[in-house]
Length: 420
Image 1 (cartoon, rainbow, N blue to C red):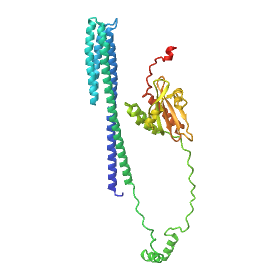
Image 2 (cartoon, rainbow, N blue to C red; image 1 turned 120 degrees about the vertical axis):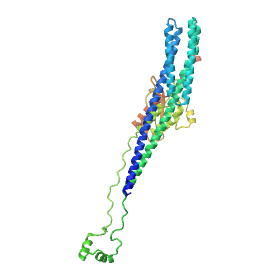
Image 3 (cartoon, one colour; image 1 turned 90 degrees about the vertical axis):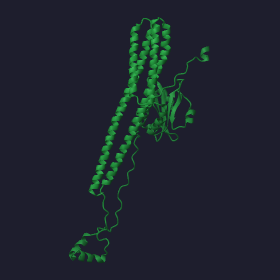
Image 4 (cartoon, rainbow, N blue to C red; image 1 turned 60 degrees about the vertical axis):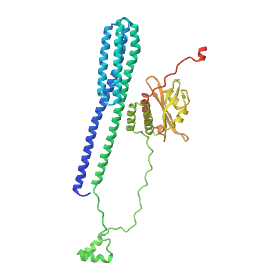
């Protein structure tokens, strides 16, 4: 492209596109910051409201406790009721989805019923009927407070899910805009690269030997001496000697492959998405991403079963559902890497050999115990990489905050123990 005005137009269009894209991304980031701030405020208010409901229940129970000042606790209950109603109103103003608004309305109805029940309980206390007051407080009061808390939690989860979807859609739109701007920039660079004109034949390439002398003498006006000088300069610059042999050294052998290192950006995004999990249906897609990150053919999450002495497969990727069901439980004293990782609470590495691939088993460590194991079957010897082992440990630590062991079964004594 050689025309000046066309080149200027390309530059102007490219700069305008980049400026527009940058401004749209800036506005999108400001909107996302607002969404995240509102989501945090909604979460904080909902948790505070749940705690206030608990304090309200405790204050009502003090009505029927011996030696307590009823007037003091009545004032406390009134204060908590005002705080709860104010909190529900604030949450209703921040809510954006009909489902969360309906949940808050249900919570408000439960609080209204709780306030009526509180009035009846006070009447029984004034009439010195503590048993009837206790029946209202510990039955109806408990149910109504639990209903209000449940609806507040439902509203919080609904709002968080909706806002997370909005944020993901905005991020996708930003990626599209960035890709479009990059494409326009590359196209502009290609258009601005100067193109060489096609070179014609050599000056005297098409003139045969018999006409060269006439052309040089008649058309160019050269003397015989000038022609002799030009002959010594070798006008065609053609070297009749055979081409020199290629003396370039052969390519050096490839160096040893470096230790595989998972993509840290992908790992960070995966951990972020794990923190946002609100439904177990999201686990299969996240496990698929974890398997791709660690070059794994299959991943299984094992959790401690209700017996407390075995592990069962909770969820997996890369294996048919029927195969996971047929695996059954693994006893904690089993002779395999998964059981060893659970017993020792340390990662186990199984090196690959000629007949089987390698594997990693990383324990899922909770506050007081090991609740399960993340096992992965890896390709191409990735299990030996310290970076891959560290990535597996990070994934296990993240999953340990999301998963829990099965609740223990009833520890009733066996018939043998009873006879003993």
